[in-house]
Image (cartoon, rainbow, N blue to C red):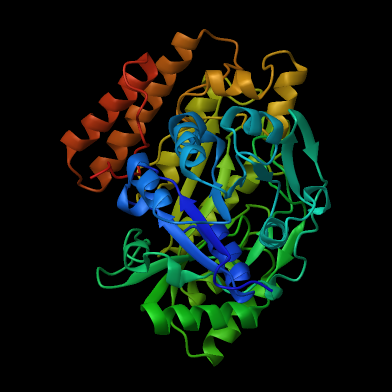
Length: 476
């Protein structure tokens, strides 16, 4: 369909940290294009911390048909706006395409703010192929589903492109165009040995729920076949020496039957792996934990979110505090598995008491793999909470959101019956307690603990908004 003169560049923007996740989205799109004959490149600013000037030089020295950039809303003002200026100034005849969870729910605002040519809305494995074909044949953009663009200052959206229902049809990520040596060594799994290598992998897409703070581009759950997952694991083992995996699925623990099939497939293939995964408390019991342990699970990441049934109800979590506690007890009693205790605050219904109870649960069940802190909820564009706040008159839209947003550890909008100063005072006290508790239990460097607490204090007071979170490395 394409040939080597049809060139596409995927830019992976800098996150200003060293623990960079492998960019599965661009890698899947690159694989689709590559399989159809196109020449595909990746420009990994995240790994190498390339500057925009270096990117400009690269663009001047090369010719592309499409230049793609995906991002989350949290990085828009900090990174993406200036990066887009650079691309627009040096793209030549290429179409500049934005995608991902950041631009998908608010494409018109993003187009008008960045000057990009196109926003790919939602999953784009099919859309990117249609776009490249349209570009090289000088076709009609109105015929390309799943995109938004401006023409004569008028906004056009061509309607949703059909997602790929059979995920096995999507080729494996095009790992070879990325700096794999850096990606397989930049993240460490709980209980991973120094010589072991790790990487991100997807076994399904979607979730059975829709929490009010979550934005997902597609609805429902689609599963890859167990056979394809095993095949991918074998390739990564043989090609890159990977035996530790971060299952990036929103909901890896989907059913007991599927987990048993996965366990059996690992045995038949004689694969010994380590992995982390995500789970919900309502699809969780002792037998599931034991199956996960037998499969090699080292860490379970669970969105408990709150210690209040009222808050859980208002955030549409569709779980309860007793279910949370049962899951916490189950993992703790099983032993040998780290646990991500994710709690947020400043959602609808939150107050000083719910924060205190969150702290108590974290300290009681902490496995001390990660330095846990509590963040205020952020109503990202596309989430139900974002639209709820617009309905309540507390938020005006995307321009208002990005004018307010500075850091995901800060409150975008105070949803509680207390002044901002009091809320930050309570949050600093809570996170100081959690950070000190973590470093005391891990015999860590207490000076480092005090440094993190100091950075949080500066963040909450507005002195420095560059705080990256207690679990990230500083940029080297």
